[in-house]
Amino acid sequence: MHAHTEDLFAQKISSADFRRIRSLIYQHTAIVVPEEKKDFIRSRILKRMRHINVASLSQYCDLVETGEEPLSDFTSQVTTNHTHFFREKHHFDTLVEFLRKTGCERKVIWSSACSSGEEPYSIALTIRENFPSACNGAVKIIASDLDEKILEQAQSGVYAEKRIEVLTPAQKSLGFMRGRNEMSGTVKAKEWMKSMIEFQKINLMEPLSFNGSIDVIFCRNVVIYFDHESKIKMFRNLADIQKRGDLLLIGHSESLNGISDAYRCLGSTVYERI
Ligand SMILES: C[S@@+](CC[C@H](N)C(=O)[O-])C[C@H]1O[C@@H](n2cnc3c(N)ncnc32)[C@H](O)[C@@H]1O
Image (cartoon, rainbow, N blue to C red; front, side, top):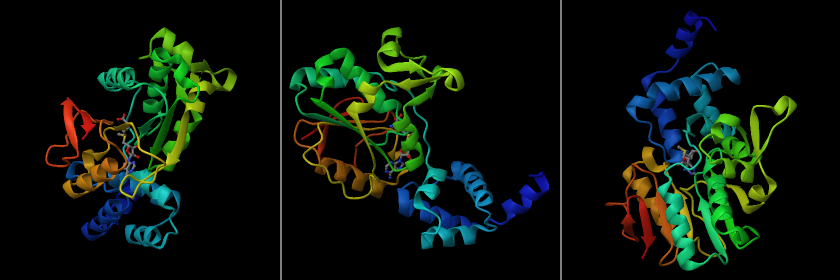
């Protein structure tokens, strides 16, 4: 598209329209679009509008409101999916310590905003390296996200080879197969890892229903763009499905200070349900 046409397109977004799209984003994801992300969101939405041939933002908002624009297509425009293997390594050490202390039998670990899957596969590798016999059903991993498209990617377990550079040689061969022919340059998660993980679409702002409590929740780098009220609501949802002594791990720039008194802080971004 020429720059000129691009400009015309961009002009179709008035401040009122932008407020409307912002409030739809908030309503469906709890994400508050900060001023500095306005242009990013604008270009993502415009791209989607071009793709489905919608000429104005107000028309696009109508489609979201009536459900003609599938919610999954809408929300995947606005989520930030940045992640990597063994992000915040100390959380995986904490997980090992927790399982050593409490045992692996019938444990459920939930990667609650798993994005493209690096987090749940890092959990599976951690279990396999430290408690190999727990991979046969003792420990179950649930991996979920609001964004169905990124969840599909996670479930496929396919990554560009360079994404797994951070793994040790032992972890690489334990967890991944090299792609051949048209898949060369990629790796794929091995079946034992996939079979440990159950993928689900879950919106953390909605009431949660699990059979039994969740022993360890990874809820990392998801509430960064939530407002205070949504953070309170979301961590209340999480507290409701954990029992005393269970573990909650949050992102490096997040804190439960003034948000939840259902947890006590055990160390940087590591919390225990009380
Ligand atoms: C930056 S990624 C974090 C990935 C991983 N947890 C990590 O720390 O590397 C944030 C993820 O949160 C998801 N997300 C945003 N709002 C959500 C909500 N209301 N419910 C569930 N997931 C949500 C996004 O789709 C995105 O994949």
